[in-house]
Length: 414
Image (cartoon, rainbow, N blue to C red):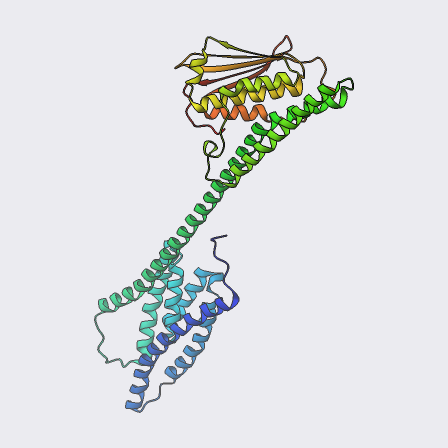
């Protein structure tokens, strides 16, 4: 939802001009009645006729119409039209209210150069118009207040609309600033929401990959054996089919657990489903061996008891590294020997190295691969203060080396 106000409708613009003119006209008519009424009363008292005064009043009414039209068009050329209005308003008493509102409107722009120019023109025209009106409508022997009083009243009359316009303009600028800040806050909130959704999608993809890729690769491998190995005896067929059924059943169960996790956005991995750790790595290795890939699993300078005391998150991340690398080995080098070496020292860091020989030719029926498994692992380890190094050595060995601080904490997501 946009916080920028929509342009005003035609009816709203018409009403905006109408109510301002309805406010300005009584001001001018009141001033004109006072000035011209005094002149007419003097003429009736003395029994004289002042043709110039009568013509002036008629012209003043005509100027009032012109000033009203100019006021409506003031936004097209604010400075020239306002300058014209203050000159007309100085000589046309009926137009004084319109000229005053035009100065207020110009002052809302808060441009001191424009305000100064209009005020100077208004002041000069006011002095000339005051002398002309006095000569036409008031008797020569009439006593006037001191000149400084007249000048002070003119300056006050000019200052009031300017200050009013500056206040209105400042308030508009404040409202626009607050609206812009609200729009920026809304865009930032939307950006944070997009980032959170992208992060959640990555978490979902990582979880689905970790949970299902291993099981489904076993299913595909054993199903391929049933398809291409025609010489299997019934007992081997039954055993292989049992492995396929068991892994498919496990994959479905884990899929249900993942979907349950995703339906509850407030649940963490630990709350929603038990996470595998290094305690289950033997089962993982046995499953890979049963699938036809020779796997050796060795501990180098680290004892089983030390591994049992690893923080859960560190143990879980290491399990995911072994799981992903064994899955990749089955996909890209089926049947090739795989060596898993776990090493480290309590209080320092713990690492795992998985190596396998790459075949000279790719498998005839390669298993499908997303290509993002190792990328996800690298991100997982980076978030927990570790590193992942993947390289293909000169002797044709594919090696994955990962290490984590011994106490990696719980920063990562399983």
